[in-house]
Length: 388
Image 1 (tube, helix red, strand yellow):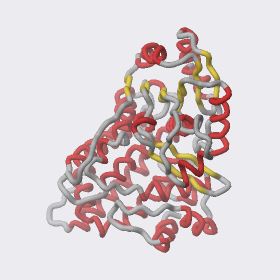
Image 2 (cartoon, one colour; image 1 turned 30 degrees about the horizontal axis):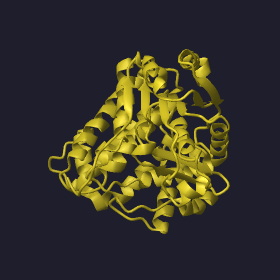
Image 3 (cartoon, helix red, strand yellow; image 1 turned 180 degrees about the vertical axis):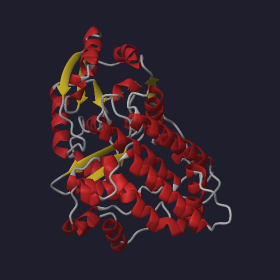
Image 4 (cartoon, helix red, strand yellow; image 1 turned 135 degrees about the vertical axis):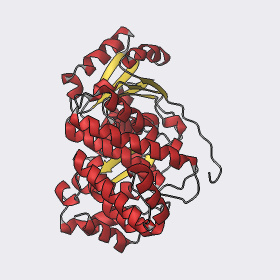
């Protein structure tokens, strides 16, 4: 393990088929006014909305609804949520949905009592909140982002053609999150698959950095194998509780900061994917899938030992008599085969990217330096073209 670090995660998790009942234990800790955040209305069709409203009313809460949160929450929607929270003096924000709802709730929470523009303050200057933060609770209906147990918040600004994430500190993390795998059963297959790849890539982003013998890498390999195994079961039977529960639990541990400890971490696939998303509004997990293989094939020579280890430990590639390069290439080929089997998108052109967008997307791509290769602008363009 490299460096010095601290680890603290304040989010309390309630997991399992009966987990929603524990909302009754959390609600008395907060004031009367609750802002209920949700997306396009699927929670009303599948009955989750009614169940949550019944518990809120039973606990004497005044509920202010904030629906219509889109898959890539916009700065305009964020400003609307801030207005709702201010006008109704809310005491608790409950995000009921997937990672976008959780991300959005955190952005609202740090902005309600702050006079500055949230886009400039948090997503351009990357400042931390100095104002009072409204507590957040999450009721998860989609597994993927891990937003239920981290401080991350990603917001899109269409006018600026930017999609930017800010990872806030412990004080912004959800106070509690409710994880019932059955709540994910009604999710369309494409969204389920996008979430599965999001989980897998979160692990990769942390794994493909450093060359020391690091406990975090052993944990990452186990989590990746769990995702692969459960994903193959879930695409055959979306109501396989064991598979869906493993996917949901792995999603949380893939991005609650644990496996990043002792690592520099990479995150360039996310930077590329988010830039694509800013131009297309495509599903987050699919943007990651579409740029992953070209990116990893490009940086592989700079981290060849880790890519060979990835091939052997995650994909069971037999390395006997082969060079690290040959082993690594087989590993990425196995990863591509799995990606095709579960049905993720492998080309950004299928997400709406056209050749004339490439340079703009490259300019919108934030360059990070934690991985095996710090990319130049021309290299970003090359990878995006390979992703077409």
